[in-house]
Image 1: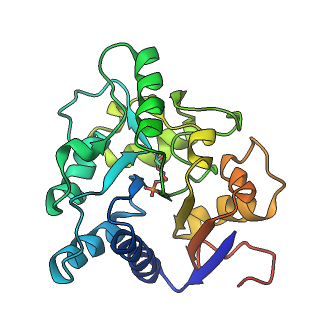
Image 2: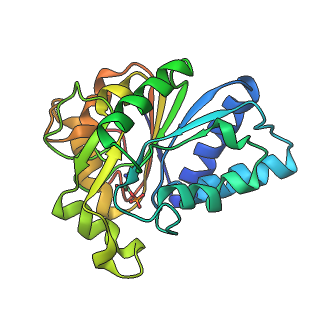
Length: 245
Ligand code: GLP
């Protein structure tokens, strides 16, 4: 793992956007894996600015999002599809047919198979962007998830429910299930960037980097990947024991 510690959320976002813009410029036909949540919001704003100001072209970029809540109305503003549309896609020249999120309508057993297949058919993910949950989850792979898991339906833990229900107008409207890429799916990406900001991520970051890889801390699986860049701000890095700080 390459670990980059920056001052704050803004610097984390600047650093991530620079890496992603460079990647898109160097690999105009790339497939990107994308994340939601508060963490990448500023990064996405910077990608939009670069698209407009530096003419970074998204015409031939393909994207796969990590996950989606199950049980929401497909038009819900709380869906990750709506998040991505509002915060990134509608501001870029990406083709709608190149955008992929897991489907939450119809047969979920079939949807998980289809999502995994569509990633494979696209040639796999070249660069995957990740956030991290307070309990060490990546995408919606909660603690206890087997490292061999591919795309699946996950039950969200009470910790994740309480961390994420602030994004819902009525907190009890937050679904307790989601469809998510699995840990194995994520590990198949050629390169990974993980972002973390703020004190409430410090324990998860410390365990991800310093614990032996184990299902207790799903993000710790990333230690077994040979191209991971972790960009954390000082608060999120504050519990690291190693001399990284
Ligand atoms: C959700 C998403 C994750 C994300 C995490 C952290 O659980 N499924 O992909 O990394 O939230 O979110 P935030 O960035 O809002 O802290």
